[in-house]
Figure 1: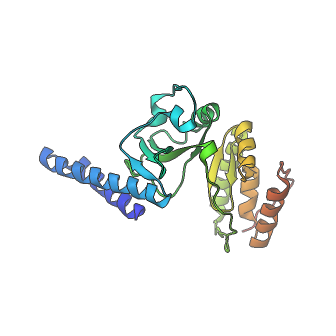
Figure 2: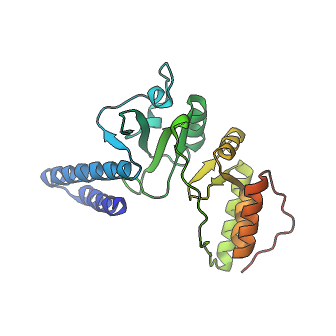
Figure 3: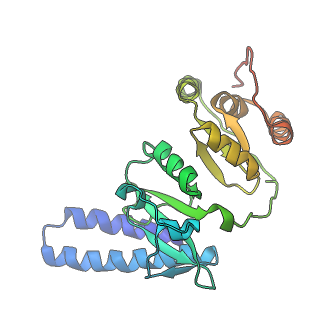
Length: 247
């Protein structure tokens, strides 16, 4: 449902940008506002949260006794959620400069005691295609989802030229120290710091380096399962030598 709503919002946004009539843009903006409200409410409903019109502070979400100062862009286009008892449980924001602001977001969350998530699905409902939905929740308030193994793994039929692009991208990520943390329920985080890797491990995530990720997609299904099981069980880092491509 959220995907359908965001598709409509994106379509109406393009219409508004092309329209030269103020009256028509006004009507479109009212429709967009209605759809964004529905998308935000549905997002909360799926997580058993209630969208609230009563904003709360980052400090309140983190359970801190005093308020903390964060950059304004950290809370771009926020939507606030409470649990069934009325307690602050999450803030959903829509950031324009993602993933460039990722390291700053991670640093702030580590400092104040928040968990952040930048899901691929659902997409942002505020200016879809130009902003990234980022969700902040309190570390102490997180509910761990039940782990379940996926019955299928993705097979990526890359062509020869795409392997070169993939390898170059992997080298770039490796040089930047970027890691990806995944959990068996499908949740994923982009990790920029050693502290983030440590926290992800404590939360039940399996952390992959850029070289791990590149190697993973070159493997067959059985080898992928072995690699993931090994890393999930033992953690640590993996040293790769003379890894060939599978076409």
